[in-house]
Length: 305
Image (cartoon, helix red, strand yellow):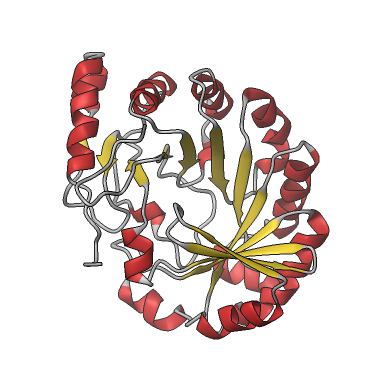
């Protein structure tokens, strides 16, 4: 049984940003909706939060950052979470370190991985990330597929004038690799400023219209912000439209955690956080449960449905 917020939305997943550190510097990064935070939770504290979440009916855990694979204890973190018994554990990564971790993460209990990868063009990749890791990321994707992480999803943020014309090239790459392409509308948050959104935001409506025209089948993911999945010639493309406010917010089933241990009820807000650090320090499970309920009580669609 899932706990519901005041708007009738079940809390089904917990997304933990386990570090604010990253080894790339993408031009559009919204830092998972986080403002700067001091410190990182230990693996033991992450486990404590996940155990409480499990007791409240949460079935899915996602680890993100920053870049979560930067943490030396990332395999231990996955092992600890896996021992709790969640039905789904996943990571969002930029893929630069994935090749070296795929086997260990799979053996530790990781189910699947999302790789942020916006282009197959080396010059465009350098422009977006300010790094030269493109081939390393491609190898990481292959490694994740080979060890059986399933699905491997490629997160492609669509940027006007940068990569908006590369969707079908990326789709072919994903289909050949056995990965799922996820195209994502650029999102404005406190960490992704107005100038970046104004410069690069792309209306993906025409892209989605073309997907609908070419699709063999279309499905809607009710408990994932009403996202559409398009099945085309044996491949899959999922569309994430966070600026479609009513659908995205009204169908949100996720609670978040900042790197320094604050429960975050909403991706787009940082004014209603619930601090768990004292409870973690005192190892007070009852208080942690109360804090989770408080964070769930504070959940509200950012835009009025």
